[in-house]
Length: 74
Image (cartoon, rainbow, N blue to C red):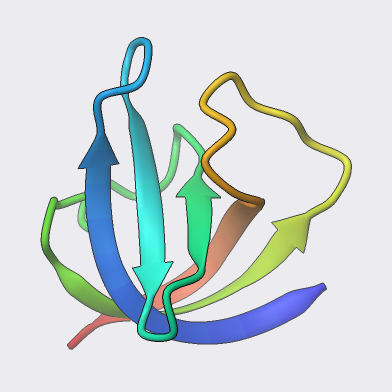
């Protein structure tokens, strides 16, 4: 499922660490490792276009995994 959302990047101290995108409406998506380092900055406000991966699980289990296709820093 493709989505476009605006939110804040957060670093979560779960296991070895995880990255999350918390949208303006409070929904949390997990950002997988390997995503562009320019996106992964704690507290950064962004607009993201991506795909929610329904066939992927993670150890962090903080929300659905969002594969980022493109992003813009706001």
